[in-house]
Each structure stands twice: as C-alpha cells, then as structure tokens.
Image 1 (cartoon, rainbow, N blue to C red):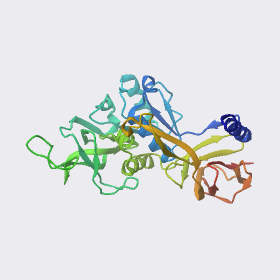
Image 2: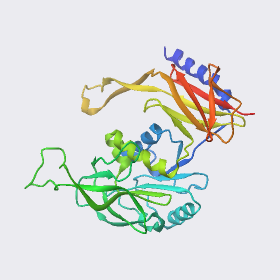
Image 3: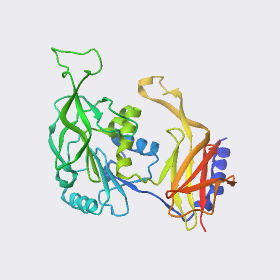
Amino acid sequence: MTCDLVGFVYHYIESCEPLVSGGEFVTGVTVIVDPPFGDIPGAARFGMVRALQQLHQQFDILSPSVELGAYALVVIPKTTTTIDSSLADRLTAYSGSGSALFISRGARSGSNGAETLSFAGVRYVVPSPLSNTFTRPGTPLGGVSSFDQFMYDRSLRLKPVGGAEVLALIVEPYFESEWDRFSGHNYTPTSHLESEWAAIVQNGKTITAAVLLFQAMGNHGAPAYRELIRGCPERLMPRAALWAGGPGYLESTIVRKADTLVVHLISFMSTRVAEDNMGHRSSGGLDLIEDPFPLVDVPVSVRSDSMPSSASLEPPGEALKFTWQDGYVHARVSVLTGHAMLVPRFG
C-alpha cells in the first residue's frame, strides 16, 4: 500500500514537472528570522506562516543578512532578532527606496532595537503594566472594524510621532486582576475607553504593531487576528501577486517561466483521527491529511504585466475562460482532486 501511494505521488509530480521545471518562484514578501530559530519556530513564526498562507501572500523566510531590494515588503515578526545598527541602516535605506516594512513587537520581545528606526514614526515608552489589553481599529483593517479584540499577551506602550497615523488603539481593561479584585472571566472585560497608547501605527510605508499579532495567531488562531494582519500588507502593498477566494486553508504558490505563470492551488484539510499512544488528549494527537476539499468556481487573480494568449487548468489540460484587467489575469477554477495549476500562457 505504501509503495502504491509513493508511486502515485511521484507519477503525479512527474506529470506536473514540465510546467515548472526551470521556473522561479514569484515572491514579493520576505520575513526576517534569525537562522538559529529556524528549527524552533515558536508560536510567532507558526502564526506568521499560517496567516500569510491563508492570505495568499507569496513570501520567503530569510536571515537578517538577506538582500532586501528584490522585495516589496519586509516583515519582522516577534522574534529575538535584534534590529542592530547594521540591520537598521539597511532597513533605513530600504524604506528610503519606497519599499514597505511591517514590524510586529510586544512586551514579551520588547522593541529589540526597533526604536532606532526613526522613519517608523513611533516612540516606545514602556511595556504595559497590564497583562492583557484590547486592540480597537480606528480605521477598518482587513475584516475588523471598531471591535475590541482581546490580546492575550502584554503589549508595549507606544505613541505616534511626526504625523504618523494610528490605525488601531489600545483599550485597557477595567483593572488588572489581583488578589483583592477579580473577574470571573479568563480576563477582565474591556473598559471601552480609548487609552493614549497606539496598538498599530503607520508612517508612510512602514507599519509598527505594539501587540504580538503573529504570536496571537499562532497560539489562538482567532480569525480576527488574521484580519488585523491582513489589513497591514493590504495598506502597504495593495497590488499583491495573487488574490484567491475559497477556504482559508487553500494554499497557493506562483512559479514564473519564460512564457507562462503557474499558480499552484492546494486544497486539503487535516482531520484529527486519534489521540496519542497513551490516549491522553493533553499530550497531543494524530492529525492526518487524507481527503481533498473541493474548490468550486473559486475566483483567482494573478498579477501580470501583459495579457495572456490563453489559460488552462493543469494537469487536466482544460481551457479556461479569463479576463485581463487592471494588470491582473482573472479566472474561476474548480478543482476536485486537491491540487491543480492555473496556467496563463503568453506569446
């Protein structure tokens, strides 16, 4: 059975290979992470990968020494990576070239040198003395608008400077739970009163978050965290390489060859099938990816500088109707087997 499965998979890969062999991935975003943490990514890096995958952002994960000029957006999630003088100089030059930067910090990691980026338009004050706070968008971010979203981790106290725009404010709870005052909830409810502290600030093409957005996504997975994250790249890089509908777990990548773009669409959903060998749920369990989840008439738009001569769904080789408008190839696809490639051809 195992050999049959391996044979089937490699036969399928072989049928796809001519379309991608010799091509290169299309990415517009790089995420800066120190190499020592590649094998111990932690919640922030897991949350970052999940969020960017679900948002269909095309991204690389690279070390702080990477050449930044090839990317439209640099993301620095909560890590122990310090923005030292060398990296700060490179980020300053990168920002000066008109490129975008998204920094997410929080009291657990501290500013870690982000205060050296004068172009960010923020002033770090102190870590919040409150264990938990709430984030309230002052302008719609992603799918979140004027809603107090609970943050499980301690935030930084941050203020805008030099005309920077506050995208979201910190709203503090009624009080910090102590021995002499207590809330029956997991956290003290929001006071609904806007504080003087900013949660997310934009200055030009730089956005800085004083809350641990990626860590919250990794630990808790609430859709509101993903939507808060969504709003930041959308403001900084409105012309993303790809837009796609369908379920949140639809994964996508783009490969460019001389005369084609190849958009991989992968739609599988994991299922909890067993607990661990000892039968204790708290010790973990076994999640398997077995069955594809059908995509039916899902809209997909891929950025292209020119109009393709044709488009097809591969490997079936089915011709697809498409339009080319505002620099995007727009098509609708149906995939029942879990994977297919939308292939616009040029010339």
